[in-house]
Image (cartoon, rainbow, N blue to C red):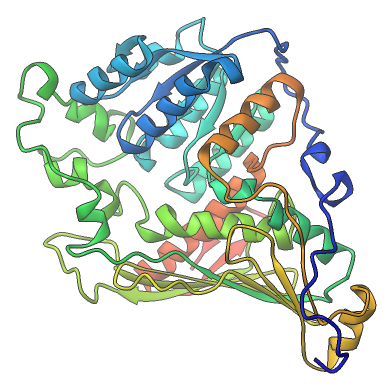
Length: 433
């Protein structure tokens, strides 16, 4: 360093003025529960992710003053397991959860193609909603869910857990204050590398289960497809589609919606703020380079680039063939912000603008921005959701951020599928190829 000063100092402390927990007020929900009012959850979808949420809700029941009196899944074996966890009622038809007058909030952890309908039905029935990422399957559905939240004034949280980390909120304050100069681009990745492929290894097929089996082996295949509501095409029972739905575009967007949603949402908080921003245009490329499963749709190597009206771009990659991560970084004129470690971001002065950086950071060439909330997880997201219902705490991923992230991610999926650049028509809120 030319200044001869220490290369790193933890001198910026998180306070309410730097987007700490104390500054997360502001949302006014339509129904405010008192601190002594128990929140009754209905959990819809109790596969791997849904069961994890259910366990946390029961483990933190006293702390959060919450309980789960009803759970729902189309696979009876999963339902039986969930009933054993929460000691509640189990139903196969989600509408029985929505229609239950005692339920205050629903947590939705189903395949993506069901998210929008369940979210809208729940909010129109007066329930608050926590929806696993991605928010929806399509751009049109994302707009519909966003509009429903505005119309019903329900508390709606999307679940990309890294949005709970202080580092992104603190970075946004520095960016808006001009401390690091103008942001021009950012990058991030979410990679996996398992023998046989992540979306195969993670999801085992139960050969003994299906729509024609009795007892715990029963699966309501027609309900899962949702073809009666136009959610997916009606096809014969296919265990690959049921157990490994993340491999098929009719139910989700593969690595883009399952993994990159986690990266884009918090980067949007840092650069654009709590509501995110809608893209200008999106390009994408990739393909099936190793895992060429019969009938598989989603690529095992995927990269997308999003340009925004604020004159910056975000480049994202996700592969299932190598787990070395591309750093999560934001590049500004005066500095590079490294947010790769889910902790306290490192800011480094850059190029001929190091002096401007030093002027803004007490003469140092490199600093670490202290963050209180680190290693964001699902429990932090649910606690935030519950506090938003009770006292109006600001959500970590509100519907505007969830929607703008969904639009960009889905545009990336379609850019890959159609091999075209996708543009956003902001006036009409639709995608143009």
